[in-house]
Length: 589
View 1 (tube, rainbow, N blue to C red):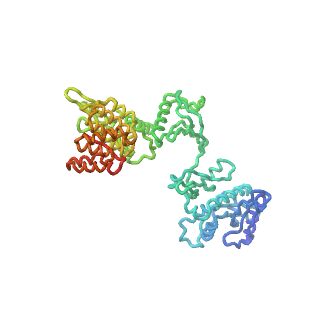
View 2: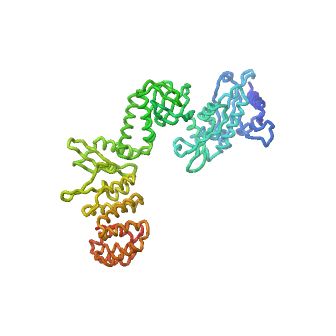
View 3: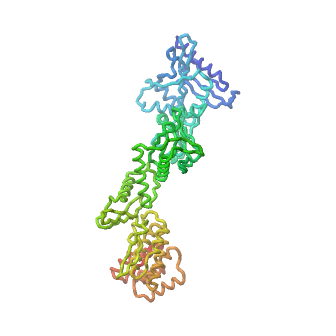
């Protein structure tokens, strides 16, 4: 058949389809004189076909091909020169048609590819060195039954996606899989008859998927290659509780329809069930509290044969028997959960976000409770680090060789005693904590710290130990501004002073704790003035003047100290008041 006849019949075949739709018109050249395009198909929003109702002008290229064998195909490939592909990309896309015509000219099949900018960007990737006349094969899909309404939907989709993608910057910045963590929202506008077709067209790239980039606050298209590698699933959420053995295990669950028509039940991020086969799949990726709930469900299911939803039996499993791999996973998760529980430490980090350092710390914690970290002597301190915080453990080795590890702040039966003669007195469990420990100490409930202090003895035997503890806690408070440390310091200062109310050092310590929160009263200032006038201890006089804000006198008294006493005084937090009124304020005897 003559090539001119082929081209003319091809265009006429496409025109016939366009003319059969009330909201399509065309302006396609017969003689193919355009540089890369043959014309356009015009889509309207109304069958009035008024100018103001034009929705999209779709640029098209139409090729004819005489090949009886291709009439049986559902898809074909066609070679297009790079110079044309580059023009299409710069021009915002093209709907490319290849019309196959039978030898007798009576049968036609319309093949198309809606080449949006994002598709063209994929086709042109790595083609910088290609000469203009070199060609690239493109795939084209058959328009089923030359359906005009299907063509209208295809062109609507092309018009929308091409307009959204633009012709340059957005396409060049298209989203790749490695960008997924920067995306907080997805969207796609699709012209499809049903949800299944919509999802199928998204995963095939025929409907462009866009993602919102949080950092730049911009919507970008996904790269064509990455979008086609996606798997989009259809899940429904069932907001009804799952009950096993009389116990509510979940408030809701999700059902996902599989390709074979069966359903998969998703109970959590970690746990899913094949409804037809009755098999469960477990993977630890969530936080530990969700893992714990999954484990409880599986344990209950081993005792029962039925899963109830809304009072009705959802499934019968005849008692669950996990396979070896699943049992090992669950056992490992239980050990981790148990270790954190014994340590009194919550783990809010997701398992799939754990770093190598996190897993190393977890292994150390498990070893502590398994007795695998052993003290050289009968006892020793062990500082466990987790999430940039520390948990002090006390290790005790018993005569039988067993080693027990206790988070000292959770060990209510544990006490530190000091003796004098035949008497012994109780000190806080945290008496040995230094400033660096307090600064990084894992979040402990305030009542735990205060209750332990209330049970201790305050007298002449323990007051020096208690004052040293006060120094460390106040120093940590100055750095962290942790209000629990202030409350603990205030209680300590009051109790130390109550045990020895005549000691000027303890009076100053109480007043300097108060000064952290408020200005001192007239009565309190008068008490300091008496100490400054009547006392002979230069350190006491200097501290009193600091609290009175008599910096000149304080400097003079500091200069009159021996070099040894001066260095000692300058190491106390109260010395910081010379430069910063809000810094540490502490005196020791």
